[in-house]
Every structure is written in structure tokens, then in C-alpha cells.
Image 1 (cartoon, one colour):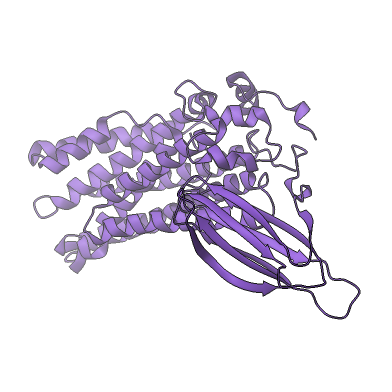
Image 2: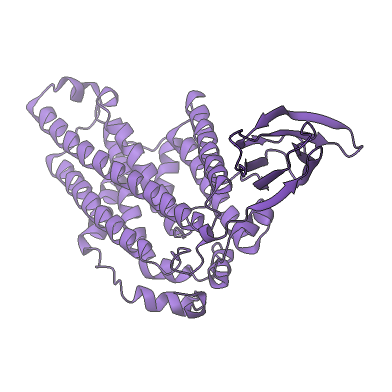
Length: 437
């Protein structure tokens, strides 16, 4: 396959693709159950007025779900965690913890069943999001040099993700709520989307990184540049699959609202048998339908036309060797200067000597120094003699770095040096989630 066969990823193009994947309709019972739970919540509010926090929760449950598909996915994940927080045995009303009556014991059994189903669904959603993120990143990485530079970019992504996780852990350690944690997670997600759009237009942190994208089809770059546009190509996905997801979002919000109100008022009003049956039915249908949606949308994503690997595009970056070769005479040196635009970039090298017919192994001196704007030199990597070496370091200054191969100590032997060097730019955000819009 070559890039000549690729066409722009427009709204019409995506619409034809999505025609191949019709989404089975959400059962009418989903909307009916959400309405029933909202009615039960209204009855509880009439008897026991809302607290300020409950008013906020009620407003969210009665509002319009977020427009973006991935924001709804994160919202569903948040609501599942909030419900599981309420269902935690240590936070249930005392009467339910003690199973004071047979009626209490039956309610506990139902709540336990709901907890199990939601835990399973939450785990499935987490795995879906992780798999999706890795899938997109790995697709982009097929266009990267398959050498130490690609390795460094992967390592930077891993560090970036660890840094993000540390931010989340700090929120939790400081006593942040589940909502606080997910607000940060969504901010991090939006940061990734901005970075991805910058990749398409070669701006921001990707201004220098984009030069590594060997043979990326222009239609793919055009598509990801528009990934965040309100009326861009991904709007077709939202129009096609969004309404079903919005319905499920409304249901899980209704479940959380009713469960919160009924457990908070359990001491004044126990849950009726018919009402707990409605709650159980809602959780069963929600987890079943959300599971189906996640499986379905995963199949749509993995086969989507924006998943074009370098191999499929006929642009195998691994074929571009980029090694250079030079002869360093006896008593001479060879120097390469690399310019770095930002700190936390990486100076990286890979070199070896071609050994001659003599039995004695040849080596070469090597060191790296930083050259300041005032031409002052600072030794970064001390001098040492090597037969071959591969390495890198993270820069703490922007500017020029000089790599020096030193054969000045040799009186008779010239050295044939084969090398590859580069200044790998800092990548503060991973490239992922192109399919979540």
C-alpha cells in the first residue's frame, strides 16, 4: 500500500465508514428506568429536602450530558466509582451493616450484587481506555525512527504518564474527592488532545518532533490537526454513536442520585422492596448495555481509517538507516555540534569503529561538552576511549552540545567511524487518544 491510495478523512468519508458499523439500539427500558429512578428521587426530596451537595448532584443528573464521546466515557467511569464509594460496606447505614432485619439482609444482598456488577464494568472500562491509548501511541510510533530515538520517545512518554499519575496521587493524598480526581484526569486527557492537534500542524512540543515522522500520510496529519474542532470530521462519530452513550450516562447519574438519597435517609425511611428492585434492574441493564457499547465502540475504533500504520502506508521508517561514516586520521579529531532548543531534550549517540585486519582492537576517545552562548565550554561526558558505544543524557541547558571523537593520541592508525547522533526533543505529553473525540 502507498499513500497515493489514501483519501482525506472527511466527515463524508467517516460517515461511509460508520455505515458499516450500525450501533444496535439501546432498549427503551433504559430511558424508562432512568425516569423511574428520578421520580423516586423526587419523592425522597419532597419528604426530606436536599442538602446543598445533593442539589448539585440533582442538577447534574437532570442536565445535558457532555458532547464529546470520550468525556462521556470518563463521566461514566467517575459515576461508577462514586456509586461504588456509596456501596462500600463500611459506609452503608448501620442497620444495613448489622443486617438488623430480614428486610435489611435482602437489601444488603441486592446492594452486594450491584457492587459486583459495577466493579466488573469499571475494570472493563479502565482496560478499554488503556488499550485504546496504547493502540494509538503504537500506531504513531511506527512512523518514528526504530532506533535509540524512538526508544527515548517511548521512555519520555512513560515518564510523562508516571508524572500524571503522581499528580493524581497527590490529589488523593491531599484528601481530594473522586470528582476532584476525575476533574484532573479529564484535564490531562484534554492536554493530550491539544498535543495531538499540535502534532498534526507541527506546532508546540511537536514542532521539532514532527521531523521524525517518516512518511506520515498528509491526510492523516490533516485529520489529527482537526481532532478537537467542534465541526471537524470526528463530529460524525459523535452524531452516530453519541445519543446512545448519552442515554447510558443519564441512567448512571440517576442510579447514583437515587442511591445517595435513599442511603442517606435510610434511618428515616427504609427502601421499599419494589424500589430496590428498580435499582437492581437499572444496574443490571446499565452494566449490560454499557459493556456492549464499550465492546462495539472498541471494534469501531480499532478498524477505523485513522489507524494507518507506517507499514500500511508504505513508509517503513526502519529502512532509513541514517548512519554516517567518516575517516579520522591519526592525530586528528572529528566533531559534531547539536543544537537544542529546550531543556529536557536528549543528546543521543550510537557509534562503532570498523576494525582492521590487525589483531589489535582499535578504539577512539569520546567526550561531550556544552558550549554556552558566550562560547564557554562545560564538560558533560568525560573523556574515555571506546571501541563502540551507545548512550544519551537529558539536557539541563538549551544551546549547543559538541560531540568529539578523538584520535589525537594515535601516531599511525587512522580510524573509520560509523555513527548516528541526534538531539531528541522533549516530549512532555504522549501521543494518544486520536480515536476518542
